Image 1 (cartoon, chains in turn green, purple):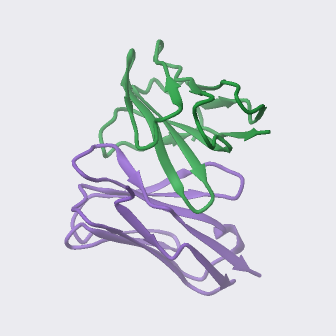
Image 2: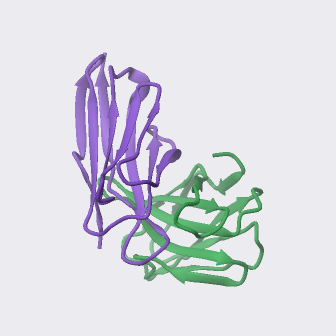
Length: 114
Length: 111
């Protein structure tokens, strides 16, 4: 589970503000993912990227945006359009986006909207 | 929506008792993965099952993949306080190759 960093660990924002969560990996993985975790909801996929300059919507992409300009980086922006953004956000990566590849998770960012 | 169902959502046990969590899919899975998330931590990969009827063991943990590849289970023998956490199963469903995670089973071990 090493090699993936997320910052910051805790983040507070005021309602109506956009905020960007950082995710960096040095595992040389092609695929990267963003999940949202709420109590009792498990992990829900927001966006994923199979390769640089390409990304796809997951199950709950509304109110979020991403970019993948570098292999190592996959930042997530939580926009003001996201109606309930308070949650624990997890970034993950895998060697490829194949269904048999292990996902390695970062430590997560806990976002609280005040 | 969620296509991988996991039960129970919570399980309280006394230390030394056994524990089992079950994972069910409405469609056949090409493989299933299990992850563990400690309280306050992040999910960590435990194991992957690929073959129909496969059984794998890791010390006190036994993982099974059903014959029809639609269900799986994780059994922990003689739980310890270090087993506390949430256990997730994940498998590619609905034609996607991206794993769908179950909602997890939170294990609470009472000393």
